[in-house]
Length: 264
Image (tube, rainbow, N blue to C red; front, side):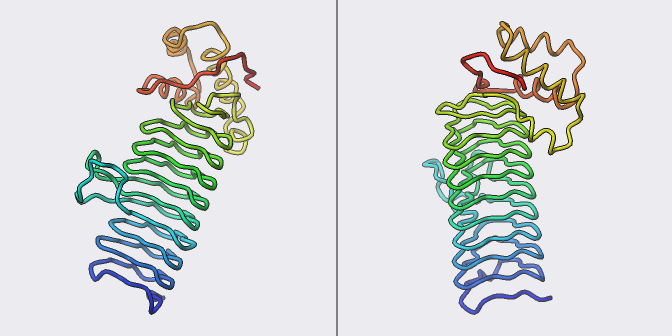
């Protein structure tokens, strides 16, 4: 199947578009764009300075690879890289990188619901869900299989760990460790994402190890440094060990609950 481009679409002459791509009415494909096979670009979408993978679906009115909202940006050549099999709904904005890193990178199998936003220089993993009007500021790092509920906001340079789930309206100012449920203004962990762990096929043994790490970090009376030292000396599952590593690599500090929680 050849490329199917609506007569009202505007395509920059240097855009590279594979076969089996469909571009809808009034879409604008700008400079330095590569679009791989199986991708559908809906009406009125704008794409520039981007590498778009295979089998992505843009409903329409999306703004992809547009300039970073950064006063330090003065027209430098940067880009956005989007993987395969992503769904990008109406009103979504995915900004290209700033001069700091030159690129925004998004993985595979993600869904960006209406009006959600990924800022410049973000790193987004696979199977991430951004619900309506959720927004990530510049330089945010989101690991795999994270769910960010509606109207949540992520502070610059914050990190969200694997399989974490943020409740609606969460405001994230510190790192959220993997496998937790978190919520609130200045979001705090409120428990483990047990349903998410089961759906992801995490073994019972590993879930037990994850619960142990959660308990040691948040339910015992250790300082964070003491808890991490203790956990590093013990045998943990790979997933639980990732929680420890995530904490050790935190630059903004990890978000910790203010009260006793259950690890169930």
